[in-house]
Structure formats: C-alpha cells, structure tokens
Image (tube, rainbow, N blue to C red):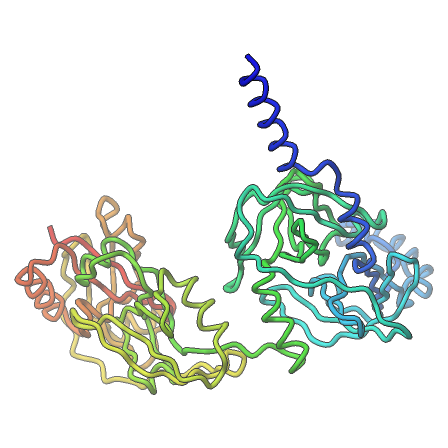
Length: 465
C-alpha cells in the first residue's frame, strides 16, 4: 500500500509541475511590452440613415426637405476610432500589430501598460500576412519582447494571449495550442490555432509561450456571434519575423517569384503521369518570367525546390516566397517519365507582371464528337465569339457533358477548352484519340487533360476504361 501511495503522490506531483500554478509571474514579465492601439480616421459625414421612400410617394418631398435642413452639420467630416493591440520588439520603439488594425488610419496612438501614450508612424505593411510594423519615438529605452520559434510549439502546449479585448484595456488569457499549420485564405498562411480567449480588440496582440517569447500574432477568431468560442488564430512567428525583417529593412516585402501557375497533384493525376507518390506541384501555365527563362514547361511536376521536397502547392508557394529575390535555386521537375533539374534565378513577386501568350493559328473545324462523357468540338469562329475566347485560342471546346460521367464529377462543364491531352497539344478530335491510344499502349489507366475556363488552366485526369 505504501508503494502505491507513493506512486500516486509522485504522479500528482508530476501533473502539478506540468500545469503552472499561476501565470502571474509571466504576466508581470510580459505586460510592459504589450500595447493598446487606437486609430483615428477621417470619414465623410452624412445626415444619418436615409429612409426608403418609393419614387413618386407623397412623402418624397417631405423627406427631401428634412434631409436638406439637416445636411450642413451632417456633411462635415467626422473622426472614426478603432481599437487593437500590438507589442514592442525593440528598445528603440518598433511595434508589431495587424495590418487591418491600422489600415487607412490618419493617426495611430500607442498606449503603454504604464499609461503613457505616444503617436506612431507606419514603417511598412503586408496585407498578405496581415502584419504591420510601426515606430514610436521615446525618450528612454522601451521594454520589449523577443520572438520564439513557432515550429517548436506542440499541440497541447500552454500559451498566453495578451491585448485589449473589446476595448476593455490590458487583459491576459491562457489556453493551449489546439492545432498547427492552419490555413485561412492567404497564400502564406501558417496559423497557430488556440483556445486562449481572443476577442475583437485582441487583433495584433502577442501569443506567448511559457518562456515569454512571442510565437504568434493574434489575428482572427472563428465565431458565429463575434465573441470568443475558443477558436482563435495567431500568425506563426516564423512567418512574422521574415515579414518584419523585410519591412524594417525595406519598408515593404520582397518575396521570391518563380513565375509559374500550379495546382495540387491528385492520385489520378499521379497515376496518369507515372509518379511514384502523390506529391509535388503540377505546373499549369508558364508566363514570361524566371520559370520560363529557366526552361520550366507546362505539365512539369515540381518535386523539389532549393533542396527541399515539395509536398503540395501551398508548401511550394511558401518556400518560394521565403527565398531571397535574385537567388539561383535548383528546381527538380518530373517530365516525360523522368526527373530533370533546372537552375532558376528568382524574381520578385511584387514586381511580377502577367504576360499575354502568343497567338496561334486556328485549325480547320471538325464535327462535334462524343467521348469520355464529353461532346467535343474544335474551336470555330462561332464558339470563339460565344465563349469570348482569345483570337489565337485553339483546342477542343466542351459542348456538352454527360452528368452521369466521371468528367462531370471532376468539374468539367460546357464551355471549357481542352488544350492538351497527355501533355501534348490538341487542336482536333483526332489529336485526342491519338493521345488516348498512346496512353493505353503505355499501360496508363487515365489520361491527363489541360482544361481552361475563362483563361484559367487546370489539369484533370480522366479514366480510360
């Protein structure tokens, strides 16, 4: 019995050590570096809500006269305020917050934990990650916090959020890391999900680990009513630090640009292309830019970028964006059943411009043909006009789709334009039948089609059975 009792005491002791008795010491340590942010914006005034009065109504003149009498004071510009949070990252006054907190602001006031207020200026912003860098001028060194490594944060780790929720002033909440690597809507998203209470006004505030390091910037909440329901999102610090460094040095971001359009590789696409596993990024278009200059081709699958394997399109976008502009990198692609390595000198995404593809001469029209659940016709002048196709567009127009077919299930619709099959151009129906025969002879179970809709390309693999 004594051994069992001792074991229970030891287990209880270990559990107590895993869960902090209090966050007070940590709160005392980090509070001086967290700030409240108040923005002021000039907006055009109005005379209040406009009543909805039917035209010709006997009340129309009455309401017009009422608005005219009240228009002068209502039309004066007025000040609109908003609240948010932020944190100091250097003793000379650099402050990180969310871009949406300070966007369009005429004046930004920083309130410190001590009650002192200073006016801030914007150093730079990045709407893609919703990060902004501010600067205040103080007559003494400011208390600040350091960034931690967000990649080391594990699901279940304790975290503390601090900020100005609902405009109530400095407030601390605690919770755990609920999930990692969440994506909401942006190309560069890497959010930490937490159940630490985050409400409106917490935006731009820090998410701390138990060492007092910032591992995230509180950015968004998932809520049906605007309040916290325990699902909050903080942009991971390893994304934020790169953005902040660039804003601090250049006043803007400078992301690498490969110059290709891509889509994820699906199981059927991998089988159709002879890939051993479903991974990589399938190139759907190569406009003028670094990728084209290096020899990347439409239909290539990018398997490795700068020494790192590419899992999917999101991963590649982040890898490229985080790479230095002007750097020459090795890009390994899958082409024609084997790998090939190309050297690409990255451009700058912010300066990228779209290129107009060269025109091609249209082939002679054929009669529509049904195959693979599709009714197909070469491009005719009538179809070109109806579908608003480019003057040089060639391929097979999807005139109709059998709604019980695999093609329909995979999203093909009337009006789509098939420009490639088996990674070779098709201009007439016989081109497609040739590609089908070649795929079957090679033992393929599916055929890869390049489909364009409103100019946007994507690959679709259809079964040959």
